[in-house]
Every structure is written in structure tokens, then in C-alpha cells.
Amino acid sequence: MNRLAGKRALITGGASGIGAGIVERFHEEGATCFVADLVGGDVVCDIRDATAISEAVAAAVASMGGVDLLVLNAARPVVGALWDLDDATWDDAVATNLTSVHRFVRAAWPQLKEHRGTVLLTGSVVGLDGSANQAAYCATKAGVVMLTKTIALDGAPYGVRANCVCPGFTETPMLETFLAEQDDPDAVRAYATGLHPAGRLGSPRDIADAFVYLGSDEAAWVTGVALPVDGGLLAGI
Ligand SMILES: NC(=O)c1ccc[n+]([C@@H]2O[C@H](COP(=O)([O-])OP(=O)(O)OC[C@H]3O[C@@H](n4cnc5c(N)ncnc54)[C@H](O)[C@@H]3O)[C@@H](O)[C@H]2O)c1
Image (cartoon, rainbow, N blue to C red):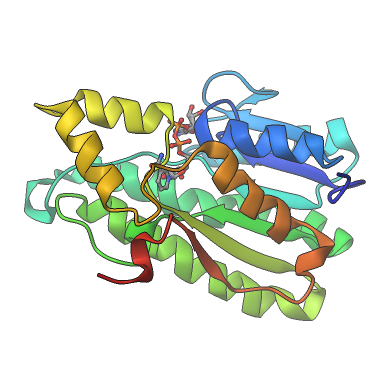
């Protein structure tokens, strides 16, 4: 307990799934949390909107007195091979999953610099390895991994760290929506479960525990890492 005592966290997508798990675990560890989400949360924020991002950061600072942990977790899934994606879908995927990271980090930089803060990002195992029929999602999540490294490099002289957690298939509303769209959801769930040597899907808490570690001072010398939390999915065949 209290591994995050005194830390003030701005968390995107904290109203659901993995983000809600992060909020719960951060509270347990003594952090103060401020959630920016499309629905629910402390401030309504569409992360595709630059003005909304600036306002969300300002609201978090006004509410908590500062931001030590910037948790960029919200994203959207995108299904389709590259040649099947129209411009609007591609642009929306990039705006939601990648450009939002640029804008949030830029807006929060004065806070991160002043408080020697940490940026925590939600990547994906499919940002580290490819996955069929998810071209835009894979590409944007790979971009999140690379932005993690560049934030870590450029932030290090200021004492700012950046790390990325790459979940395997995790039991959240996003996964349930994905499964519900399949012809045989039970078969796809069984297949997805079988990809994980640990023999089960992840829980939001499994993922949130990694965020606690990377956001805490225990990880003071850890930066630029993309950590798979995936029940062994990426360990090998
Ligand atoms: N569930 C999985 O299997 C899985 C696996 C790997 C990575 N991820 C990643 O984990 C993160 C969280 O996903 P989840 O599974 O908890 O999904 P979720 O749908 O349960 O939660 C996503 C949250 O993001 C918010 N959001 C979506 N678009 C937004 C926007 N434009 N502006 C502001 N908020 C927005 C939603 O309102 C929601 O609260 C995402 O980055 C996702 O890509 C999920």
C-alpha cells in the first residue's frame, strides 16, 4: 500500500476497462486520480480534440494542484486490412491512438518538467508484433511504443520517465464488443485464450499492477520500456 502516495495522476479512458482498473489500483496505492474520458470521469474529453486536451490538463491541475503521472490509456480498436480502410477511419485511428499522445504530452510538459513526472502509456502486444486485419491499430500501437522511447530519451535530462505497458487480450468492454461482432464469439474467445500460455485472458487488475510499479519510485531507473503483460503470449511459439 501507499506505493504511489502523494502522486497526482491524470488518466485517460479511466471510466472503463483497463483505465478503470488503473484508477482503482492507483487509489489503493495512495494516488490522487483525475479521469478524462469521452463518457464519465472527472472531465469529458474527446482525445481527438486538441482544445479538449488542453482543457483537460488545465482541469486536472486545478483539481489536484499538479500532475505527476500522465497516463495515456484511451484508444480505439480498428478492424481491417490496410487496403480496406477509408481515409476517415485511418485518420480517426491516428488521431485517437497517436496524435493524442503528442498533444497530451505537449500540454502537460510544464507539469512533467516541474514535478519530474512520468508518462505511462497503454500499448498492446500487437504494437510489438503484427496481427491480421488490424493494420491501423497495430501501426498506431507500434507508434505508441516508439513515442515512449523518444519521450524517455528527451525527458531524461529533466528527470521525466516514460514507459509503456503492452497488454495481451484483457477482459474489458472493448474485448466484449470485439467478441460480440464475431460469427462465433465463444470459439474466438477460446482461440484468444489459447494464445496465452498462462491459460486465461488478462484482467484489468493484471494490467494495472504493472502501471503501479512503473508509476512508482521503485521504477526510478526504468524508462523507455515497452513491457508486455500478456500471460506469456509474446514469449515464443
Ligand atoms: N482489452 C484488450 O484486450 C486490450 C489489449 C491490448 C491493449 N488494449 C488497450 O488498452 C486500452 C484500454 O482499452 P480497454 O480494453 O480498457 O477498452 P474500454 O473500451 O473498456 O475502455 C476504453 C476507454 O477509452 C475511452 N475512449 C475511447 N475513445 C476515446 C476518445 N476519443 N476520447 C476519450 N476517451 C475515449 C472510452 O470511453 C473508455 O472509457 C486501450 O489503449 C486499448 O487499445 C486493450
